[in-house]
Amino acid sequence: MEDGVFIGPQACLTNDRIPRAINPDGSLKGDEDWEVGRILVRHGASIGAGATILPGVTVGNYAMVGA
Picture 1 (tube, rainbow, N blue to C red):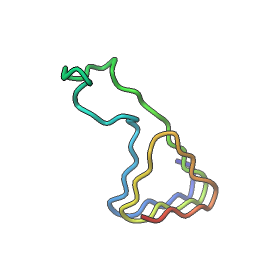
Picture 2: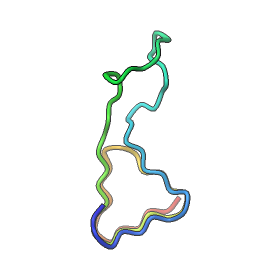
Picture 3: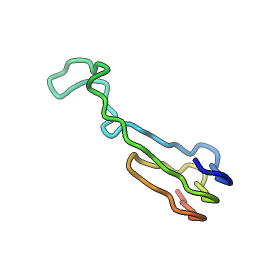
Picture 4: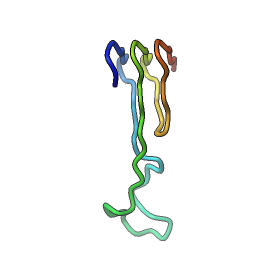
């Protein structure tokens, strides 16, 4: 998050590329199974209420994301 960012109510920023509790073979995921991604929200951007931002996304300067 850079300065001046607005995040509306119930917005969700997720850093897990594959959000599952188990692996394809049915085993529970361990620490080594998680693939974490980065989200960058630039200066002055607005994330609207209820929006979901996925990993690997950069929201540009003064951009507006709506749900």
